[in-house]
Image (tube, rainbow, N blue to C red; front, top):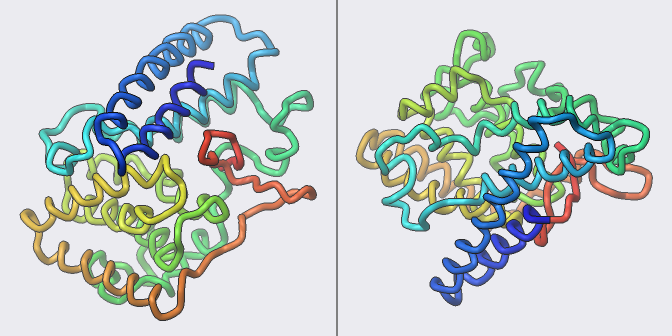
Length: 299
């Protein structure tokens, strides 16, 4: 219940920001109390014997904690957030929730017979889906030529010999999409399949790695999922400012890709994709949350 209240207050904070910054800040502070209480209780439960009746609540709370971590920023001023602010150990913790979800999956097993989530999860084999064919087949046909040159992407390169290869492949598949509930899984591939090597480069503020995260932010910022768009807007702007100082060539490329995206949208409108999986009742089965935090989908 604390996590539901916390996420609801976060959403209210997000809605009120355009009209009253002070009210938004007040709601955010209130949300942190419930988030803290939920986290404390959650750790206490996970550290002891887990009754079978608690497993669905454990899974649902984990999903909500992930959304809260994604949304929460201490400031909406790009000059006070990553990568412009001094580095701290928790700067990229929101990107590391994938492993936590895999651990929760093993504990809660939301595909078990008596789980309320079984209907929407039965056809998935884990919290991270199997890599799609285009990822396994190394399809680089959608990678812009300028990006291929900058990151050394060729038909012979791979994630094993080029740490940027997989992120570039994923981002090139979504560059014509507007983030929505129906295609969120395609956007979440970027964090779901992140490698330890790429994450380490981000923590070191490697310009090329920061550029790729900034490109992803650029594609997420105008989406319809409130818990993703805030960070995309604020840290996305921080990345743009940081690159303009650290590597003007990469900043120019990021702006070029943004202009090209805007132009294509004006000429042809957003290219939308259908939900990745639809069960017999029409319910999406890629996890995300609706505007009030209700679980709609499972990735």
